[in-house]
Length: 252
Image (cartoon, rainbow, N blue to C red; front, side, top):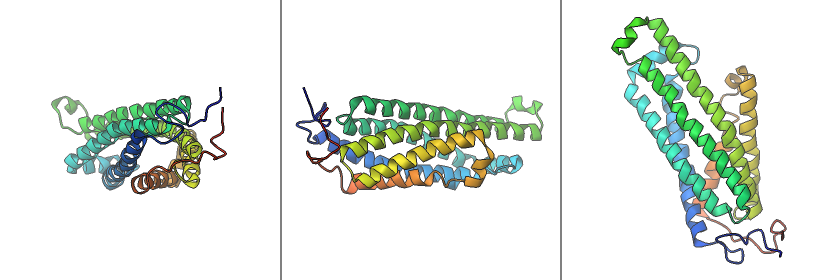
């Protein structure tokens, strides 16, 4: 028996269900809110405190604004908690398109989220070495600064690993957006491109670490534009009812 690709669970003759509209609003809000929190934590806090190649200055910056540093880590944990809600929302919206493919995207994003959440242990390790605890008196200041530097490097490496899974998971979700016709095609295509760019460039940087310093955040910006753009679209315009005559909604 032939069925339309959008005639999956939760749909009626391929039409968008109320739960999908609600999930779209939630996803749109979370994309925008998470980006704001990420910019605060990465650029305005840790980006100014962590000085590449200067362990002493980095340690001094963190000690001088430890509460702010901890607050940035708390905002990261909020992001990772809400990413679970975001992934759930994306699955609710896109599972009628291809449930198996949507599950693949969910697994990739959940692995990414677990890695990024555990990465924060590296930052707490740096704080532990700067705590001035009694057991640290066995080490001199230079050694403690070296330990802090290593902890923060592990922290940064965790982001790189997580970003690989983030990009691949986002690319799969973007493919489903393209298939669904729920949003304009150019947004979905840009999502596929920017997501794969994030994963592939991150993999190259893992092999050639020096490349990361020269690229900075430039290779991440397309992905940021995609997430914010998609978030704003879902908040303002919402989902678009796909046409039954769409060439991407062929029977299978």
